[in-house]
Length: 333
Image 1 (tube, rainbow, N blue to C red):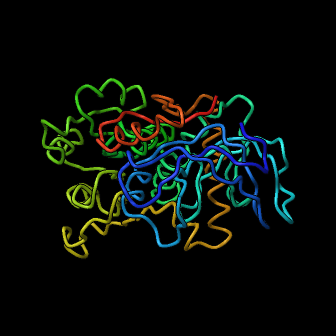
Image 2: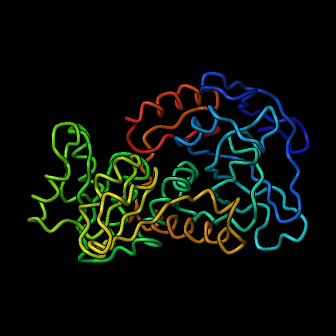
């Protein structure tokens, strides 16, 4: 690792583009401002939002820009008025995509958003949680309030958000139906799915109705697309709820004053730009809960593969195929 105060290694983007345009570079080590902590990065989780926002760029970025939202590491410096966190503590956080990220040796975080990592949780596992795990947590518990006795449909159960949603809903005592390809069926059953529907060969709505004897489901966590969310909205029982992780459904698919569904848009990262201090602090609370579940071995962080910093472009290209199981995480030696 570089010594703080000198240059550091980072993976940078010079302009909007695909993952293979990322390059290794030496950039200045950032200094924490008021309310910030500096983290010596040990691991950074990779997410679809990384290659998506890389392709589009962001108006708030300066160039070159460092990607990476899901960071785990050790605090090595704190800014003015920071007393809740101290150098030497291990932390994880979900970063603000408007700011330089964690694909570097050091990164800055809003102290409100960091959660302490339990001693029994390694950095790669901690870095796998923020974006996907917290989106699932927000969907399952904050929005849908899944409880024992519920029947929940989770689309894309082998993916990051889907895999965490399957686990959390199952842990809450719900019956979990999920969609996955045939070669991932055993994996999602291991995560807690009761029933698996092969979305490639089966009619998902018809199969859900068959599995539930025509009743439908109490909750839906859709991780695929607006079209997918719309297609599954009508599967809800009266008063049921749908959490849309990848885009809102078209409410016109359900006649008014019939099923009376509640629809929840999951926009985890918007807490940084549109939320107040309570919304940002809640990021740390949710992440702390997830870390505790991992420490208690009630939640699998689903780390499929770890990669080095120079291997990140290829890993993001792989992630963009949308057929990656679990989580990919970049780690430093």
